[in-house]
Length: 457
Image (cartoon, rainbow, N blue to C red; front, side):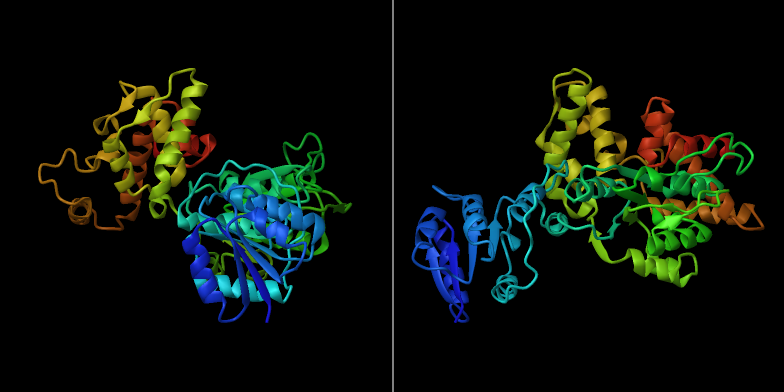
């Protein structure tokens, strides 16, 4: 029977693990890491489970000692102090697996069985710090994934709504990879006119097209040896998808207008808020490219599914923006935090940051009251001029009926134009007319906003 050692200063955790694991393993428990390390002089277990925060010798001390003296002995780390850095530090120090508390006992058994069979062991690697904030349970899978991928060059697909922090995750994957000393190049497919995407990615030769007055190095060459992050990959045109697939297969490409192949070694990280499976079914995304990119997925939860992180995130953003403005930091009252926690956050973490920036500028006092929040958080933004105070969907449906009676043809263009004008007008008003800030609030580039303003008159 395999021998398992458990180190935790919490007696209840030791008792539960000893009772459950004893059915399958020979289990010994220790109240701290120091006693466990002393016991290694007389016996070697098949696997160790250790808490991180313990008196005397911590879980990191246990990891360091075992890494130096028993490198083949798998160590499973568990902690209630769950953040991304804990996961990365654990894997970086040589942990076999990382389990955030509270954990599922079935997960513990599954991980132990893998550990005992010595499968899927992780090598050691130094890792860097990260700026991603989150202690909610829904963020733990994100942290664990980044930690487990920290030693690899694997292609990763990052899935999440706009504003959830997909580029932050991509940057962390790069910083904690073997390519960390090489370039990290990010490119958003939705921000580039379709006719310029291939030149942006692959570069062009002088005279390749009108306006190409000199040779240009594309993003693939800029990222050579490092990582290329392709955000909103679902917006990439089909012909560009074909060229990308060839680069992934052959590790070479031709600049636009060129006749000499360019060799590159680039790790690809991709992201999208769309369903690529749906795009494949609709013929808008190549199936072979989908399977090439969709090797490993990381799903980033929307902010509405991790509301317990809002106080920490808001405090971070308020501190950040007050420092940039050389102002004293403002703090949220309990009532204001309650409003933030009940809002739906369609713009996710990016929207929260924008609101914290607005509050740093506009809130009248150091303690932010609920009534200091923007109208959209107070629940009176859409229907504030409606005497009936009906739900916005009912008001919207009434408007559609009015349009139907006024227009004999399709009302879709009328609806889209009016809504686009309303949203853009809102963004401009909330940014004081600054187009750069308005574009940031809308989650688009300044050039795209300028184009929409022109189109909408």
